[in-house]
Image (cartoon, helix red, strand yellow):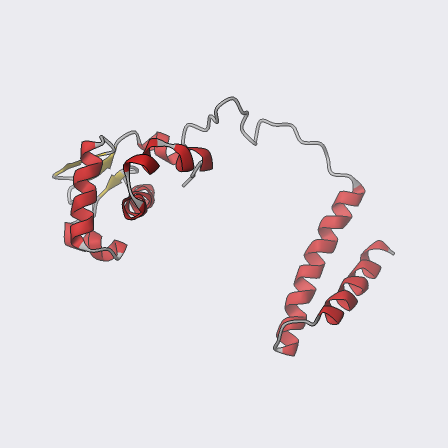
Length: 161
């Protein structure tokens, strides 16, 4: 499930809905994404979830769920029928049309091959992270600043020399 930060922070959804309503909306998107029929919140192909079940599943009051369903229907974000709750324009909300305004997708951008220095830096960072985690577990406490410096020097020596 994709969330584009600019649209999320500056879009109409933020202006038209309060924080609780936006929380329910993101839960709806997640449920629609997990559904066998993507974009439809339902128990199975023919059976909608009862509202009390959805409220319990989302850990929200039933009144909030009913309020959001009414409001999202008025905003044409959803449509409810005897089969479930349909998220209108689901592919837009899920970012399934991989276009990003004026920006090529990550897959289409050419990336230069990393230099040897970049590769070594990545190896160093990964080994250091693992070594810190192992040392912390061994000691049963966080590392002191001195222990962190000693560990960095040890790993650096193993990789760069």
